[in-house]
Image (tube, rainbow, N blue to C red):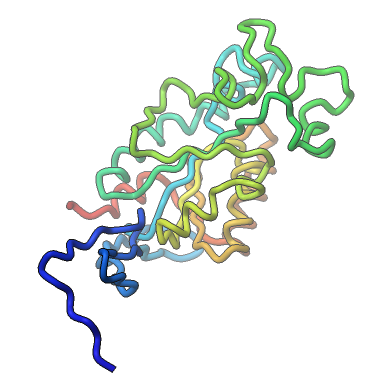
Length: 264
């Protein structure tokens, strides 16, 4: 069978936001667009060093938001020591611009619940208000009047110390895992992402369980140890790192990634 040649006047338009896209015109649809050539980085990691294609990678920054990391937020209201949850700020300040410079998307994955909480089951509400008498999801913080983890509130906003750029991607989540009931998987697949770097809080909770769900969905997962923090006891961090190394992917650090990035 012969194909119909394109006319000189048929300007092709790209449809797609990632490495894979269609090219379309009034007379032709090209489904065979090849992916971009790989941009490789070999990174020191555990249990082995890894080589990744940066053009098919993204970093997910989990819950670096005021309710967990800022004075006056929900965790501060509960009397938690904020230092462990604020520890990732410095490493992320160095890493995120370096990744953006080589084209790696930055995904901000934050709790951002509906004001009416109608999509939240008791199992999720209980985590934040186990005796029914506390300040749970949607509750009003006494210091500033913000609603705990509510979409578009101060509570759900990323901390001021971490810069978000217009080209970054923002995804609201409603569970400990960021894949449950969200657009995260669809976005990553449209971007043709295969490798995910993870940072944020809490290491043993939202970071770990988003990572494990990513692993189950077939993504390559890299937890960046110094870009993660938790107010849980240290044994929770150690168990999380152990399980990532043993079962769910690899563990590295921000400087190891920075050192591996090519000059483009």
